Image (tube, rainbow, N blue to C red; front, side, top):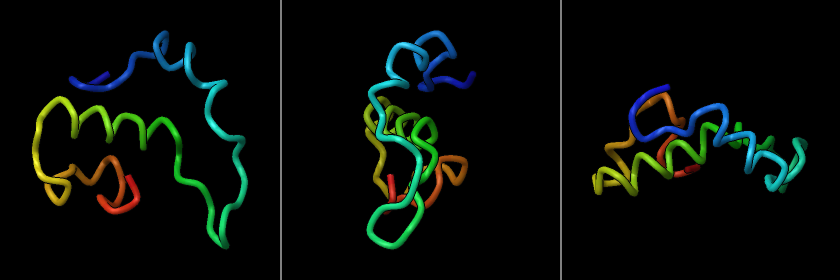
Length: 62
């Protein structure tokens, strides 16, 4: 677990609240945990969206 990311225990508490995996609007959903961790990184650091680390996926999809 990296700084600003959810632990396995924290993720287990919210995982069931995420939409089911599948397709939306012609594309595939990104990994929900990756997106949530990207949001957490953004909120905790206050950095610009374009500075989002690559491990969270493209900044415009988080």
